[in-house]
Image 1 (cartoon, one colour):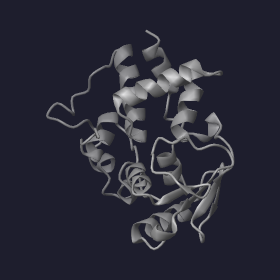
Image 2: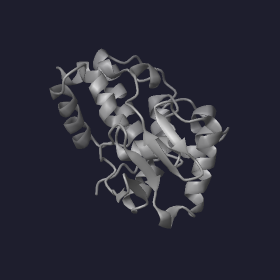
Image 3: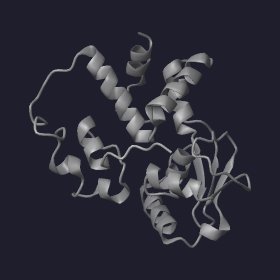
Length: 208
């Protein structure tokens, strides 16, 4: 399976902001953005002005990197969002937020989305009592997501859940930390998602 093997800290530096790709490290003073907040490469410190297309492209790349989506898959998700009823940008974010690997991360079962994706692929997550190992699986309102019994003693999952619990969980999730399970209560409103994401730029990019 194709993967993005570019170092995660370089991805954050390329976009000029924290994408929270490395779990706990992103909250420490070891974060690359805290130390070198400029693009990687020998010309990274030279400031240049982006064209409108360049701004739109960077926004698309940023969202792809946040959710760990490759280009072909991202185009498919956008087409699905465009065909659905409602505002295309909001539909796009909803599809991304409902992915099982993202929900697993938000519920604290993985320290990062990449780790959560690995946990899903290793048959460590149950949806409504059934094993699901597809990261792109779309979670629906009312679905119960939980850590499989065989994985409840994994130290990485325990550690990630402990850290997530100390930072509070999103309001659209109902988490039982002790039982390592949660309910996807409802879809998040746009106001609940990061304001640093500008989905309208992606709609403009793909509308050309």
